[in-house]
Image 1 (cartoon, rainbow, N blue to C red):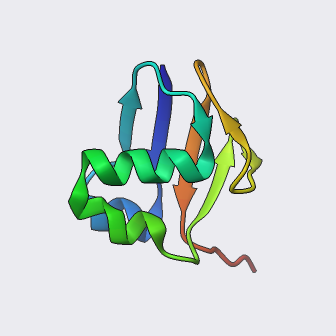
Image 2: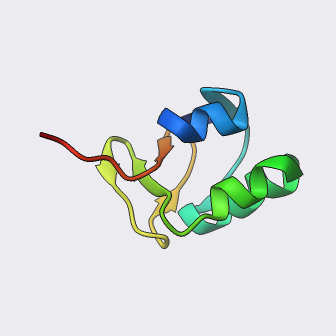
Length: 81
């Protein structure tokens, strides 16, 4: 199972903080596409160029692998002070 988390404004746009997928294996980019295919209303928000991803709490590239037991977080850019 892959646990997918959504944060900040993205969570608000999608209307959920979390989604779980059984039997997914691929890259971060493929995960975005898979979620967009499952939930067409999410596609534009997930494909936005500024949406960042982390896999197992480490910043992830589009080609980072995702598989069983991973936690993936999608979030808009953040700033700190």
